[in-house]
Image (cartoon, rainbow, N blue to C red; front, side):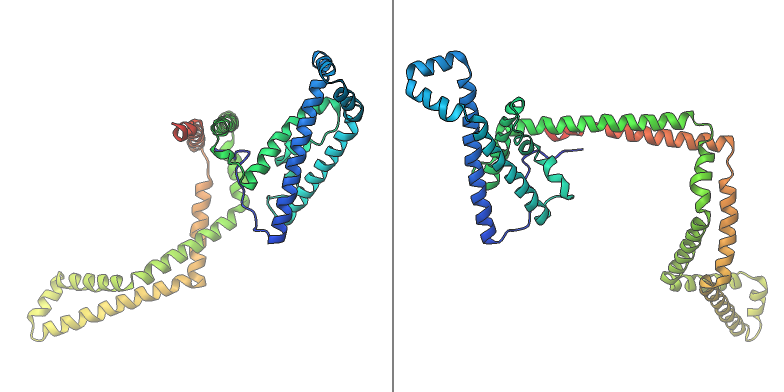
Length: 339
């Protein structure tokens, strides 16, 4: 099982030229806003460090006073303006994703772009989460083709172990679930009876109807595709039988015996061929269908009879099949991909 890396490109419908230009312009605006906001967050975080603040005030008191009164004191409102812009970006991106049907469901967008959503939280305690906007910045630059994240060594390293981690987790979950099923099968005293009574018996008539249809279709198809071979076999069989018959051999010694023997052979072969043809055509008759249905039903009832031996065999087959699935899932396929 493999996972889709965060920056894997998804196919989207081609945009008209005007929409593509508008999309590009908006992405450029958001990139500038992300860079400006991250820079502002970094500078203001450094401003809060007392030694750096004192050094800044000592080196450039005018700039310190300007920053303190113009930016730091109004930092929340300035940051709130950025948050409003990013929130509009998320809503617009969500709307465009719905219109373009980029994802399987309309509500997938905020989960796939969780870093953009968390970056819109304006609370002070979540300020460190603003660093997640770097992911949004890289995603937009990658989409514009200005960078190629997939070629980065760091990205390939993270994508590799991200894939391995998800595969290992999903394999462990699958193996645990199959082990629980095996335990239920092994500890159940009436598994075969439960399968028959709750799964097979309610669908008995449907299964018999399906068996009848398959027999009728396969028999008709097999005869239709091999009719000439069947007719030839019947002729050979009748001829060989008559030639090996002592009565026919004595008949051939009589005057005109060979002609009578040949006529008899042709007549018997024709009768046998017509008989087989009638039987083949009768496959699609209601009488034949009724016969096959009764035969299938009686065989079905015999098959449904469960004794202790058959129940143990059914349980062993299920347990072994589940064990094979566990072995297949437990095989670390990522080792073959990354060896």
